Length: 462
Image (cartoon, rainbow, N blue to C red; front, side):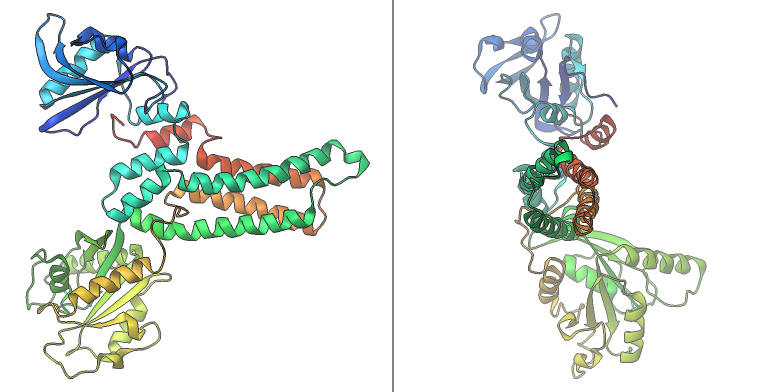
């Protein structure tokens, strides 16, 4: 997908499909103001100051009035894209918006591709690539935490972290490169001891960012939380209790849930994606077997496993065995000792064993909403821990993580080379590669394929 023709003036509807009070049409490019002037009856926009709004009418080629609108003018380079931009705030009729857009296209504008406005902002130096990606994350954010992370990146969170790291490495790299120019004189301009300290600090920073990706990605996409256990353990009742609505069918008949049920819920500003699953047992028919198989797949993909068991009918040995068979490496576990209302005298702490710690067992009666608020708090604590979501050094993009991992490999090569007194030219090569991968994050080094992949996922109009 070619996004590189910045000589054109692009136009698009910037509000979603459907009827609303207001709809927005955006123009950007060298002829944006002139094209807008051809259809706008009111003040001449080309004579107005930047960042000014003007009431007027949109007229078609036959001077018919299509709408009364508010035209906002942004004179480049002082705009989102760095180009001349005009935005028409129209009435929100989808028919009307399409008519005005078609009129602009007939006047010389071309239809914007997905993400092309933000693409131009990147190409014109208004945003780096990590900030441009944060725009998409901001639009897609479904929770306070996801919004906070996206805003942090948009303000330059990871850009600043990587920029500082790359600047320090670049200083030493230039000294190493200088040594190559004086190779015959056998001189060292770069202090090897200081260089090692910097490399270790850089690797620590990269490791911290890589570790933060697990949290950042979970917050960005919602924390996948599977509710699993035997049939009739109360999984669907628990889901309804968490959601505070009758979302799943509840019955005393074992095996009521034959497929997965997925619902979202916001806990303390963090989005959780709850998945109620078919009960785990030897299937009675082919459909139930498919449900159990899907349950196992969802467990494999989840960040948090809520294992629910009936305290009346389940022995501790059976519970231990099932938890051990279901729990995956690096997966967070909460065990819900359900139906405590039927057996209030049982000591649920007797179920502690290996993976099952005291703080992760919750006595519960989903039917009577016993301990549901506490369960929500435990879920938040388990998923987020003591990490600060407003921390601007949280990585939320898989592309960033791949670049950081590649840079780390190169920096480790440099460290090993210093220890083995490797030739300076080979050290320089590994340093160049590390700098290259760090530059990929901000977009200082990029290619059309990467840009097309990133901006092609944006909505049209942004």
